[in-house]
Image 1 (cartoon, helix red, strand yellow):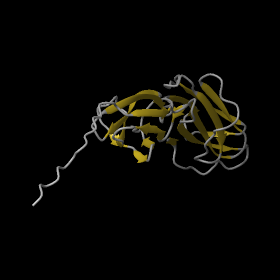
Image 2 (tube, one colour):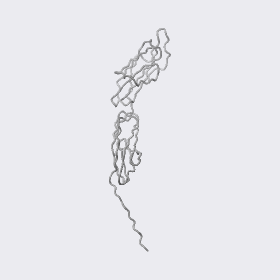
Image 3 (cartoon, helix red, strand yellow):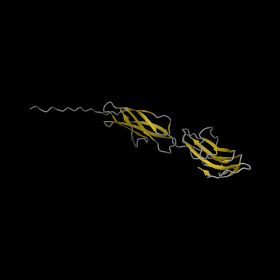
Image 4 (spheres, helix red, strand yellow):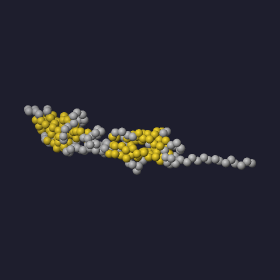
Length: 220
């Protein structure tokens, strides 16, 4: 009988962390952050890529397709031009880890709410031509930019998002004809987040005519 053949096992030591490349995000993130890049490990291969939006306290898996990876993160509501210390982490089969920082700014919150004073009080009965004035405390936003747009009409929920911004912190609305009039204010920050208020109605009639039919009065 012959002796059993010896089994030869080759061991490869891998003590080198994988490489990881990141295409950094540009601009301010108003919705979902999508980050992508490449990774590689010549010895044992990359098995996992993860992302963290809180500086490495918590992680979530990225998609990994060969050497390409992609990671998505949606900031929570109420983020006002805040910087996030994100990280991307690649792990190879030997457990070696590489981490790449990715800082981004997110903003999904509009300017501070309108604190307004109205003259005359909504619900007042006026004779055309008339006017209603709205003034408000200065608004702030994390982006440092606030533009206010205003319009008066006979629709309760108009959104004035175009035209020339209001100068200062007040608006005088011309109430030129009979009807129930409303004033609408929209404050917009540098990336398009908005804060909206609607005021009214003011009931306007004409000399010798009938005043507008009453409706719900207030601000919303």
